[in-house]
Image 1 (cartoon, one colour):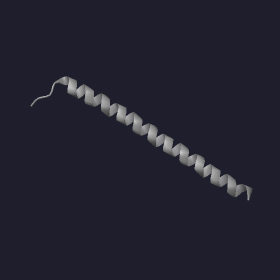
Image 2 (cartoon, rainbow, N blue to C red):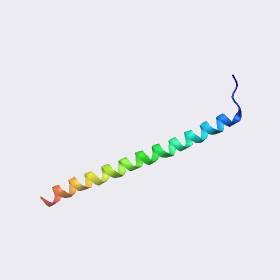
Image 3 (cartoon, helix red, strand yellow):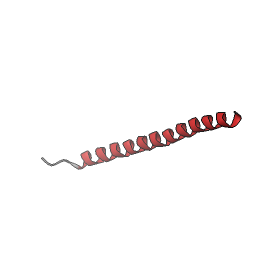
Length: 47
């Protein structure tokens, strides 16, 4: 069974959207981790 070009375009678009969402997830994870580490470091500095 051969697929038309539309199937490839849809799958490419979905792959792009998945990549963008994955990158947002990774960057957000690093940002949250950085904030948590700064909070811990701040408590250690004050003590």
